[in-house]
Image 1 (tube, helix red, strand yellow):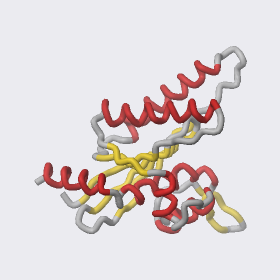
Image 2 (cartoon, rainbow, N blue to C red):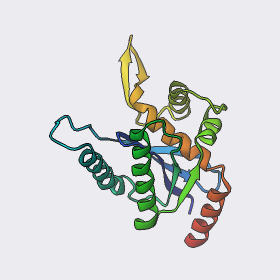
Image 3 (cartoon, rainbow, N blue to C red):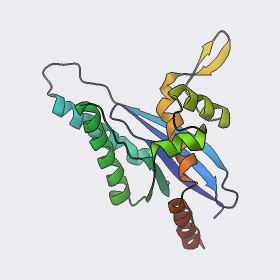
Image 4 (cartoon, rainbow, N blue to C red):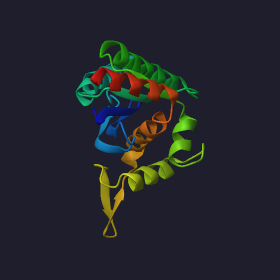
Length: 192
């Protein structure tokens, strides 16, 4: 087995970023295969309860994630924490539930990284901005299918790349963890 297909997940109730990547098991070099942004729109009708809208968003993500993760042998996740509002904490709960269902129902092992590990592995500082994360990912993987636009004749990444760049960085950080080394050893042994 020379390469394994993995996914980095940057979960959010409205913009769920998925980076599908291949990792060479010998050199640990990674390349981006696909970038998927699962967007859910807030229901505009006042007739729909907020709880129903949250459930609909969670169902939409739960329906699209298995398709995005087809052929993936491992996922890298950043479990959210520290919400400042009820809506943020509710979104965190939805994301954590989706992560757990991927691991338990789809049988794809998860490697967890902390937000500070993600930023440190990518940009070299625990306080990297969204823009710095996008610039890092765009520069490191220029041939990835980033969302771009033309600005004064130059192709530049859009802010829609925030969750996609974070998903790529989550894989980058996760590859440095002892948990990934264990997962890699198991996958390599199973393929032999």
